[in-house]
Length: 463
Image (tube, rainbow, N blue to C red; front, side, top):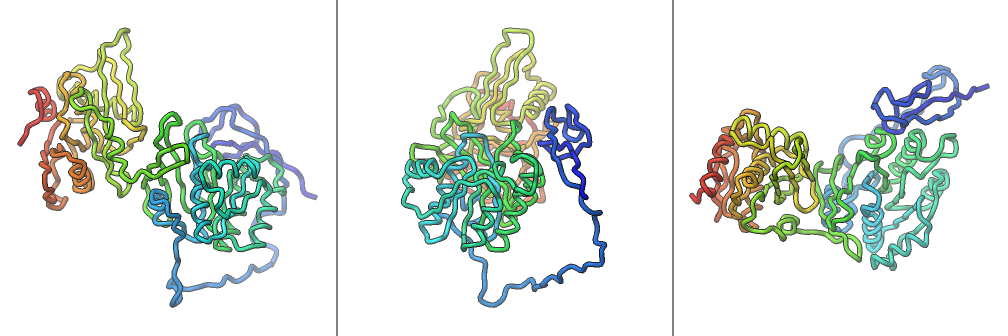
């Protein structure tokens, strides 16, 4: 007779503990251990003399006349992020903050696919069918032939998938699903892992493209076991501020395309609309001849993106100056301030510093260092950076400017938007000869002192 065993599993990292504790020893999270009861079975292993089924081995090459055709949604930004469309049998995990628009995005995608003649099923574990219909009416897609259901039992969902040929399936959300053979509550690590494993195994066998909508923790990570991100083929994060109209769909993992791609959407009354040229949109409200403003030419995956960097340096009313950052790394700002003080003689220690990436986007690449430094120097000296300049380059601790990847793509995007000067790091010998871009002059600098001297003299050089 099997005996029940109680284990305490961390809901943040999935670590198993034999006794309850207030803090997880693996990830350091507090109050994250929940009790889960399991039945102890026979000893593990391949004993018993029972042989497994021989696998059907197939060749690597496709059979003649057979190709894998992607399911193109028609939403250009969404197809860009997924690598050109959905691959039959793929499993996509979409995470994001509450109210950011995850359900709206997947509903628009499946409605577009259903209008192309594909069989699409939307299963919601959080809303009733009528609530999903109301959202579809608000988006103007109530006429799309999408089958709706409200269910949380994986056994019932599996029976539905087996009974009919489904091209696209949406599970909203995976944290609400449960397997009735597991005794723990829905949303626990064991339930999320088991439910996802069963659904992924079945949909891959049947060739159904599946969306899993996932909740996130307070740190922005997808709730549940970390292994969930390893089980799926693609992991997407929907980012943005609910008080801002822009939304960023970012690829973190993609087995069928490039990672670190982004898609830009704008939230409106009719749902999410694509932003074909995000650089022009992010710079549309930029004010000319304002101190503390510089334009950064960045890369998000294969897409060049221009973003305005805003800096403000103000006198500290109290003894401890404040450092505030929106859309960038706080520790990297501290490093650049230290380099400007130690290597260039600029004093920021007695001033408050505020830094903002305009447009609600978050920048992670170190190539933004030079644009951030230009904005900080401009704000401190009270001299605006000429509006025709763009910047990109990494700053080292000795004040040197280091070259970054894909400089030509960044400069071409800047020239397309009317910029005539590009301040970049000196190209290294391993990089190919720079492409001549009509109407754009490139200024290469080696050290941060050169940038400080340019702004201290009252402006950047014109030749």
